Image (spheres, rainbow, N blue to C red):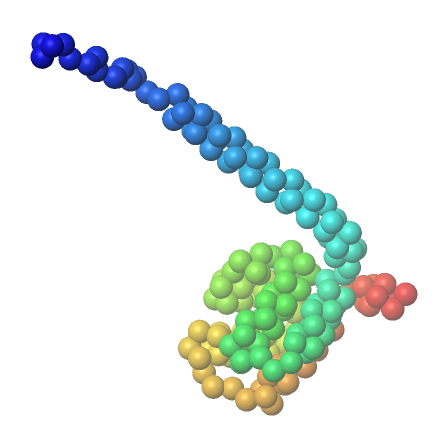
Length: 174
């Protein structure tokens, strides 16, 4: 009985079907997560429609004054952050008021574009000094104290008030 041996167990040929089930389940999970993210983003975008509609109806000067008030309420900010926000508010106002892409321009590109607009020479000089000082604080980290920050806030307010057309001021009051 030495010449009789047991039969070998069966050998699987090809790929195990469980691999296909695992890949299919993984793809299904990725698709479901993607659909969930899409649905959440769609719901969150629809809720912002009222905010966008309110902003569109707002005049450039009213929007700038609202943003400046928000900046004042922000409390104590570092000079760098303060000047980034202050110049961003003023650039947004210039963009909406004069229809120039001020938010995408550097100071050296913005000043010649503003020079073509009807702005008083003394005011243009103040605007130029403000943007150059803000750039020094933002990018060269020039030291600055609270008095400069308050003076520049009032300067921006004066410039917005001076460049606002008379019809827009009566619209804001009414």
